[in-house]
Length: 271
Length: 281
Image (cartoon, rainbow over all chains, first blue to last red):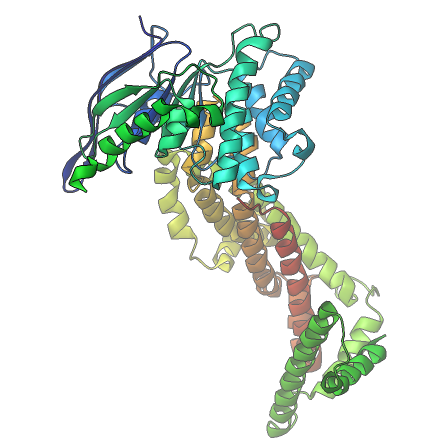
């Protein structure tokens, strides 16, 4: 049985002009430890899929199961990194992570919670900046804080909604590397501290082909909306974690890129 | 001190042509001071003209400032219940305003939050608020008198009623406009009700609440003068009425100036607190 199981997901929004179908028949099985990207043109409903898995939106049809349990609403076992960071502007970087840790682990001692916050802020390189408020730090730092916040509650699945979309190319690749590191560090080295093994299953919505290839085991290509569904699923046959420069020099990288471009923009001949 | 400032104004206006550089914040302050002096000068000039055209039935600025000075020179005298210094009059009014205002805030903020959070309470209370809000607070005076059988509490009651509406409306609006992003964070990380209240709802709504309080305070300060004219006793409103009965328009105008200045200070104070609690994204 798959770890995360999306069964026949459909989403219809009622509008004044009648029903508007965003998604239809989305079936997806994701194994434990997999990194899956959803890619597609804007408006194809890929964020809607993510919101249904997070429980923030309800599917009109179909069901989602995580580890055999049906998902009915939002919960911390599915950590979300929102597109626009969604940090609370009146809290410091530290406070943003701490309040979430405190909400999810109310029974832990203050010292334990402090330790968790320190650990994750250190991993994303924000410990120095922990006293700053979100409006005092850059976009990249805000996204680091949001990622630290999501990891700090040790979700079973991490949901990333175009996490690096608003960042410049350089910051984006740095943050992608940090994400890889975070998954390593929570996955293995800290089992002592985190009895529930760290977060290693990820769904990421993106429109960046390079990002999808670099990070994913599988890339789910969506058809154009409305009534979007899964067009195809492309496997990235390179072992993770990957080295960016090594990956780019492999022939498979360009082949995948070509394939994805064809799915997203049509065959080059039709150009 | 003020002479020195005037000197600076002259110096800067003369020297700007020669490129004598003042720090920008000093220039800014001097410019603002210049506008203030100009605005006061225009007001005094119009007032003087009006006074002359009315054949002194409107007192002239000079005689009024004389009276203002004499009022201010002995602000704390106390010759019995109906004859007190201006500071004591203001103290009495401010005490009533703050008592009514604080009681009003204690009711208005929770009520506004309730209305903002729960559509049921919004539907229930909104018609009541909408009907009572436009009513002049003075209309409540007889009811206050009937209930409390005494002028003092009745005056505070008026201020209480006055302070309710802007705070209720702004608090409810603030709560209902909490962005979905913040609510999503609370949902995903399963914030308890208490954590949602203290870490999201109140911090987000605080600037709105403060706007409501600031408006409430403004109206309360408007209303207290009228209320005290009705209630008598001690207070700046009664002082105005008493001065009129004593046929001293100088004292009335002097009181108006002081009421305006105190109101300005109250408003600036709230404005400062408001700015202090507004956060960027």
